[in-house]
Image (cartoon, rainbow, N blue to C red):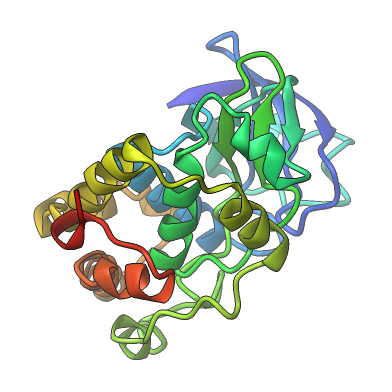
Length: 263
């Protein structure tokens, strides 16, 4: 883990109260702290989603786990977060990132075909919070990036060992998706050979995830985030079950991919 050099300022008005933080690896991060008002499950969600995004080669900003000491907190944080020691979650700050405002911004992106993958991923992990502010584009590279996965698993930060069992076999639902980004993504799609090839590769990667790989992600959740063994088992089952049912999402979106693709 890396360490904090200075907490600079609060970023926006998000419910997890992220701060701009300079760390000892020389990078500036957007950091969510264990004492945020949503609790450590917001960090658990970010950690799991980011690892899954890496596996699926989805466009996220680089991230790190950050060691937090009580002495790191300052006057800028005292009214917003509880000064808990432990592990924070940070993503590298990119001041070239702009909010995606319309479908043409996606259509002109250098990785435009990642947009449908992002939509499918959100449905897979029960993320109904892909709002206007967390689908971004780098103004220099013209690359789409996704941020903010604190509210996933259909219940955001209130899942537990009692709620997760009923969610595992839950039907996929697109009615609860944020309509702004959903409409922009669907409006940007141009189905051609390149689109189909990328979608097929992505769907096969989803289907080929192993339970052992998911277990390894879950095992690496920091201990101070206090996820019980029972919850870890249920999180693994939830992800594995839903990834293996990705064809149901393709049917909802009226698309083909993977084993069901057409040449």
